[in-house]
Length: 148
Image (cartoon, rainbow, N blue to C red; front, side, top):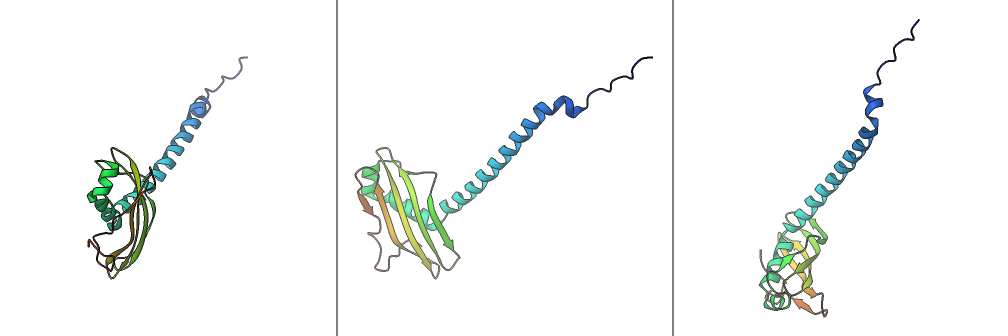
């Protein structure tokens, strides 16, 4: 009498050695993509805000900043700080890295929004080399307002 035939191995028993690591790597890639999407959304919202745009345009237009950093002046990727508020009121506190052909700096923006209008308490470029600080609020009225 012959022994019963051995059934062929299942798909799982043949393929688990590559399937499990592939599943783990795919899961880690999905988690990393989710985190990067959240960071992109947050940084995108900060960079599209009025305090960010106003601060960056003032820094690019200031002769002392251009002389110290060189042109073109480009913002860094990792903005630090926060922006809170609604259409009528809010607060912003940002540290924006800047880079030019001759040097680097950090643009500090602190602003509050009342009745739909931003007021800038701090708008300063701090140069990385030498520690010089350039105040960008020189063209404001006594209320600290300019722009929109």
